[in-house]
Amino acid sequence: MPTTKLSLPELLSKSAAMNATFNTEMFNRLLSLIPTPAFYSELHERYATNFAGYLRGDPEKIKACEEDRQLIDQNLSLLLGLAKVVTAKDPSLQEAFGLNPSAERATVSATLERAKDFRVSFDPKGHPAASVAKIMGARGYEIWACDGDPSLEENWRLVVWSTKCLKIPIIGVDRTKLNWLRIRGKRGETAGPWSNPIPLNP
Image 1: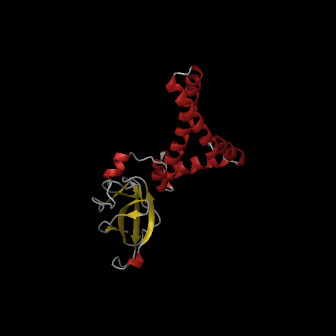
Image 2: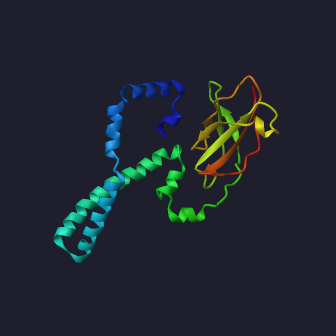
Image 3: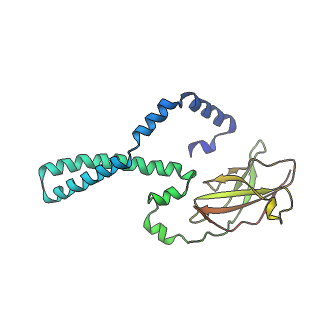
């Protein structure tokens, strides 16, 4: 997402601008641009009918087919683009909309590999960020933290979800304490094994 690389003040400014303009009227206008299932179904059936006439060389159907092709392209691109954008909130939509090429689906393992090269770096202001080697087939990454005994599962909690694997900001931890971090890849409901825990010193 374009906003993931913004600093906290920059993100606040960007969000304030959106808050000032995003109202009910704009929301309804956005919704009006999204094709309904009934509209798209009717468009598809019409295109299929005109395409059959196109193959027979019917001049009227050829013209209608070209016009419908533009509408199909416009609305299909909109739906697929929308599905990609909201994948960050619901990764299962990518699969539901058929966004993954069949060849890729065939090569993705049912299980995910263990996270490798999990590490923490710090920006000039001392803010921590985590990185990990990209996990094949993962659609996102979960980082959990623990400021107690890391051998007890109940001490761990989710602190960050990210669709990227590099420079993930670590938030929601008490930096006055020693924290342990671990990461795993996820794809829908499928979760990979945890990385080895690494310390985040106070």
